Length: 274
Image (cartoon, rainbow, N blue to C red):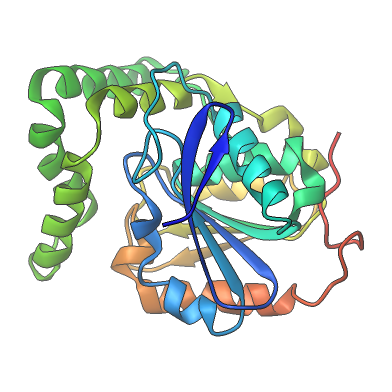
């Protein structure tokens, strides 16, 4: 299994296929396995690079604190070391946050950006939002990941016909290193690049499940501030859209990538930020 030594941490990555580079960034407490239903379809046309962020999957799990900026810098170094930029960047949830950070910090590495059930900020502002965050941290402390994982899985995959997927998701979450999971959770809290998203000039696709944690309207609101962004809503989907609606998601993703492929590096398809 390939690894790169990045800023004091061994980062695991996988590469499959040939063609323009598609970089896949997983969510909190997950790994490259987030994309197991996408990689085969993508690898038929593209060189797919999936990375385990520090603290996740097969990557090393150094002590925190972690930062979204650190995750993005790690990814940028991986692309640089492998000479694989610019890339079409695809991120779900926390991975979408990393994608946003990469797009504003290292725009020359990003040919296009797809963010799935994510946002350019996670700053709890109301009492209700703060309580949700506090409840998650308390539950993690009281139950541990083994106790919390089934609850997270059930919230994301509640239907009876999703039992197998639910068990798979719960098992993966439970395997996380608790200290690393806590550090990654805290990396999200208070993070924001919302004031910079207007500088993102590359094509952006915002994908949202119609039943995601945050409403579709909030995605439309921030997408309206990005010059070349559009929103796609996936029906009957919650937070794990690539998992609970893989066929619909894959069609959206492949159509978007096809639309924005074959542009030479350095042309207008590459992001330009402040």
